[in-house]
Amino acid sequence: VCHALAAVLPLIIQPSPPSARVPAPLRASSPAHGRGAFDTPRRGGSRRGRAASLEMASSGPSPRGRTVSAAAARHKKRSKKSAMDLTKLAPEDSALIIDTLRNELIERDAALVAMNAELARLGNELSAKGEIVRRDHPLTPVQHLIHDRGVSKVRAGRTASLSTSEFLEALPEPEVTTTVRLAEKILEVFKTPIEHMEYLQSAEFASDIIHLADETCELLEKEPRAIFLQSPVYIFGDIHGNLEDMHFFADNIWRLGMHLTAGKFLFLGDYVDRGLSGLECVAYLMALKILAPDKIFMLRGNHETREVNGWEEHYGERSFSWQCKERFGVETGMRVWEQCNQMFDRLPLAAVIDHDIFAVHGGIPRPVRGFDNRIQAILAVPNVAGINPPTEGETQETQQVASDCIWSDPAAEDQEAEMGPDSNGFGESLRGGGAICFGMKAIDEFLDELKLSYIVRAHEAHAEGVAISKGARVFTVFSTSRDHGQGSMAMAGCVLVDFCHIQVINRSPAYKNKFVHRRGSVSIANLEQQQLEERFRLGLVIQDTVDDDDEDDEDYYYVDEHGNVHAAEPEEGEEEEGGAEDHVPGFGA
Image (cartoon, rainbow, N blue to C red; front, side):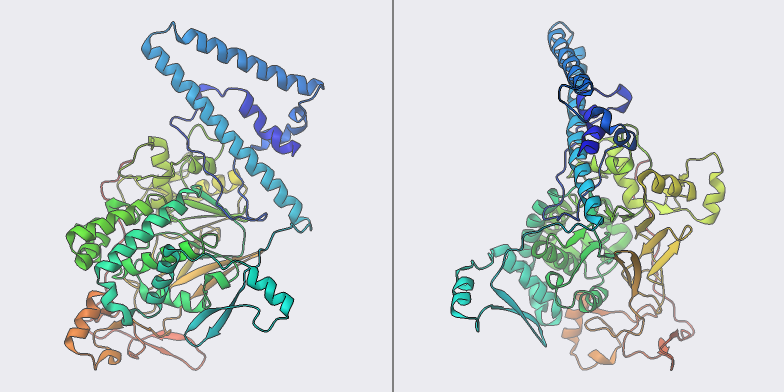
């Protein structure tokens, strides 16, 4: 505790120099709710401050305590003098002093958050040395019954003794609100979308999405812009409206439901565009967030901005805004699109796992003046941020930090060579529009600055699902196997951070589809034309391309006697479905 207090007391008591002041209001973010003793953030608290801990720890009658008291008295005297002089200054000078004082208050708020984080970090260190932290476990009178079609709930204690039964009967039932019922309905629709095609095209579904997005906004506003998690954590990359790959993860990673699966689940963004089931995927993720807010965490990708998911000129029918209007009509569709973007505006930007792994959609941000480290800079981004175009409260600095998090990429070898030894490790991205790339030097400095070991990010398509680069310190996770021109052998992957291990999980190209089929597939050969068209509108039937592998199509891959999957050569004249790299539309430097 003494170490923690010493790390932040100088910031609270003494004013910072002008060069270190925060240029715009910093909204102090509370830690993610429901976090246990092992799930605590590490924000603020410089090494220099901790090193000087014993010199500032006491506030009693000792010389060190008198030093602290004297510093506080001097600060109080300076504040009173500033308040007295304020009445004698010109209006523009008064405004400048008011801004200066406001920035000092903002810095002290941030320092208090840092102190709480440092105290929690010390608690984690003590726990890591063998002490088991006590947690309360309220009992709920519910048992989960597993059967062929899923999991159902029954009341516990049916065969218990009289006294136990009476105790269980007295326990309150878990509260089931209208929102919870709606979220559970969405999960049922997700399990069997073909049975709910009429609902998925109805005004009721549009209204339900708006309601879910509104409720999810309230949850996301309580989370800091950088989330701090403790393993085990499953990490997923781009989804891009791919219902089939999302089903693969649901059927194999959290088959019994997230609430009955150990660990947490972190999604790195890009939930919409390109794929044809963006509405279903977003509704499903929001429902999961409402039902298990302490287990699922969603970060923001570049497609969670209006400038990208509204870029119909580029994506056409694969644009999220186009899909909303096509599904629900222009007026209702735009309401759905805007409410989803309101939710996207509140998504966190990054996560830190086990104080060792930095997770983000794009990449690491450039350094920003006025912050001890870049985690603090991310925490300074407002809890509601449009990024581009910016919303009220965003500054040029916070906009740059947020943009770097969702747009940047690791530098290619030729880009590394162009940077030169005197660069800061950052360069211009091939995406253009002011986006950046980061090289080995930038990675080294970032990981050393925060005492981290790895960066896990998404944003780039890889046929192998998970790619490793930059001296095995950068993991790129891509969780959709379609719509990016990676061919029929493309895999959808995720990463499991399990205590001291990082494990890669991929979907095999030979894994059979359940709901999405090619137009020429034998699985839907007996459907009538009207049924085919209805499924086509929902993205459950797709065009015949080599990029679309199906369980019925043995011409696209085969499995040898050792279980290895091999791609067959495409027939002459057959082309892969294209998937051009994202470029930044109207993105400022």
